[in-house]
Image 1: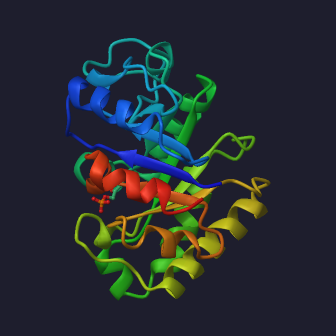
Image 2 (image 1 turned 90 degrees about the vertical axis):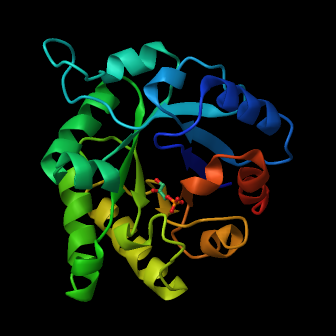
Amino acid sequence: MKIIAGNWKMNGSRDSLVHMVTALQDIDSKNTVILCVPYTMLGVDGGRVAIGAQDASAHDHGAYTGEVSANMIAATGAKYVIVGHSERRQYHGETNDIVRAKAAAVIAAGLTPIICVGETMDEKQAGKTMAIIESGVRESVPNDANNNVIVAYEPRWAIGAGLTPTDSEIADAHKLIADTLTSMGLGGTPVLYGASVKGTNAAQIMSIPNVDGVLVGGASLKPDDFIPIITSVK
Ligand code: 13P
């Protein structure tokens, strides 16, 4: 059984989410399906699909205009929150320390964070991929996460670009993440791969050792694109 998570980023509407969850109700799959949607769509009944958010404040409540706390997200019935997505790191200056604080707030609210790590093209070309991944995991995942956490490897240069690393690059990255989590006392934590996943490459990517599922951006927006990913693995 795999975890198939969609990240809608800043796309969609409540109507398109209802359309999607309706289309997903009767598909023949035992995989866990998660859709992480904009805040304004939280509260839509996902049925067999677990609903998640895409960010949460590190703070519980107070004078933080524009922020939404993990407790507020939990109150909508959502179960997951993406934290540290590369677009948050790139456009909002989120560091590993900020990501860890947000992940801790998500866990404290009884939700599961999906913590993203991954290297930029500059870091890849400088030969720093493995170092960035390892420090990303060590510094972004709370040590006391108590196995209520998911990690996603998203090579930042491959997101939305139609590019994917080679199978052996994905295998090396996922083995490093699994080993790092084990050394932190978090062995068995699911590790997802994300960046340019689609129906045509999902099964192959999920056959790579230590790949426990996928985090899908663009191809999670329409049932015709998302369903083949979910059903590509039994
Ligand atoms: P794409 O699947 O569109 O490359 O996006 C990946 C991603 O950022 C998921 O969080």
